[in-house]
Length: 271
Image 1 (cartoon, rainbow, N blue to C red):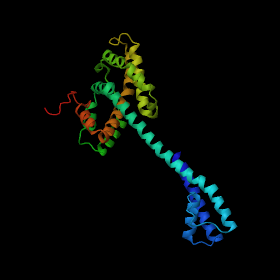
Image 2: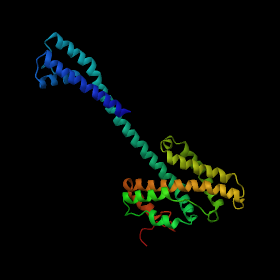
Image 3: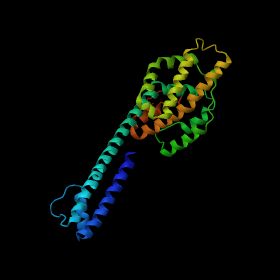
């Protein structure tokens, strides 16, 4: 919006300057350069007194330029300043959002990813193409994203400890609520959708007192809830690592050492 308004003001401004230049050349008999100079200093209201209209038509034209071009000129300045400040504010909001996503994975997301991967019988195929390392480039991330988008997500409920999953989410209940309430989260639709899916699972688990003795229909219902999370959280995890690789290389190094595709969460650098 700010960019479009700036373009409109700029187009009007240059149109006014062009009309003024042609007008001063005709009614004042000025050269093209002098007429352009006269138009610019008149529109910008910074005349130096070295040139001024001498004919009645020239004076009328100068007044018209001041009234029309002056407002347009200051409109350009205001629109440019607003666009600059808007970009800065957008960048700051994006940085805050990245911090929130990082907190999510540090607090609960990485553990959730690890447990879901362990319950996926076909995860070995993902491990070969999505096990991020320090050597990864943009091309690696792009290829992995394509694989994750086309992957058939499925989970073996026998490999998932539902009581432990319920305790994990219950322990982070307040944290998840605070994330959902944060105004910056709403600007990231995919992450908001993931948070809602995680929070929904927390509610489903919290309202089942015997998670280790559920009927088959309930286990199937929870499997679908978990699969919904699984298909979203892996992509979000990949995008998050792609972001911190360029912006926070030291944290990217840590994440590569504790990637959920590894059997251990040991971050020791030298072994």
